[in-house]
Image (tube, rainbow, N blue to C red; front, side, top):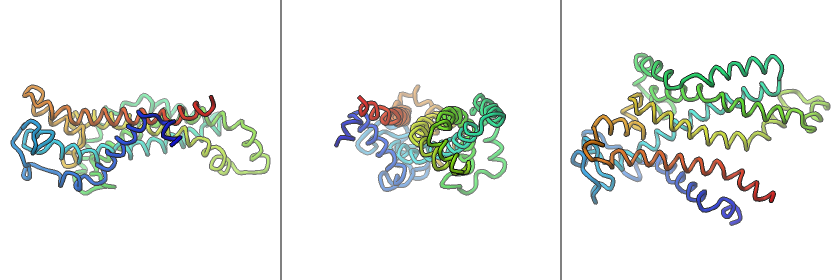
Length: 288
């Protein structure tokens, strides 16, 4: 009860929203049935919301609610895998650079600076067609088709540099703490010091930054899908926006086709931002 009071109503709502999205991503078929396609579409094209189709239909008669729920899985998977790759690279670079210092630190930070300015959008425009030509349309990897794995890798390798700099600065501070000095005096190896004394003290920072990285990954995936780099066989919310734009839904008055995936993206992003500040707020309340 105390934890719930510290979180506040807004963060409780954010947690419930994310919980609902996670459930939708895990069991979409149980909630809205199999993913509809052109053959199995159950409505008339561009039908407004009704009792039969709560969120209307798209340009070929597919239920928008069905598409939205199934798209949650792809959007969240891409964001989760991309942020995991980003956090792993960023944490490794930041800890090693901050602990080693000197020339190693300088060289690793120059590499991080290069990736910090590397445009994910342009890199994806180059790599996605190459993946398709290399047979990327066949099979799946960890639930994602290879064309989407390209998006995951692109987002991951272009978004870790900021994390590396944050982790490095904190590692520099931890490196000079008395408990690290004591471990060094008794003969602990560098690996043991990093794994047993530095990394555990970085967990809260890494978790908070991971949430923000997921937010960035969702935005990047949405932007890439919106310009046609998504996978039509595994639709995401960004892919839905792409097809809504291609169908001219805004001009045709089919607002539900655009608003639904757009609202889902904003709702998840706002919920993640809200939760990313929950930890610091709770700690400040305990110290006052």
